[in-house]
Image: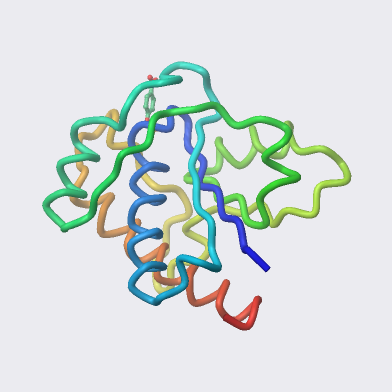
Length: 156
Ligand code: 4NP
């Protein structure tokens, strides 16, 4: 059984592609890439078809992680396809809850709810702050906690 995980932010060019790439890296390192499928999307249509922000690509490259994805917008179908849908901040979560079909079985939560010992709930947006390294550190913590939780939930 494949577990499907979707990361969501506003533009799908800064935070959610970073989370997608970091999580994919951890999943691959754990030898679980056959078991877990990963994607990211934005709540907005602002950047559809664009590659990730240079700041995200640079911080990933500096940490030895490749990323090739293009931005897309979240769709109602995503709530059928994905088992876990992780919002990068509370605004993204509220937007997802508005879009979510009533019969969706997906776990829809804030990504940082999985980050052990992290006291903030929202990943600050580097599109405005330019603090891509700080965001990377947070994303790494969230991704580690999320993988541990999924392994526990799904017996992987
Ligand atoms: P992201 O960052 O949601 O982390 O991809 C943003 C990207 C673009 C915009 C806002 C946030 N924008 O307003 O275009």
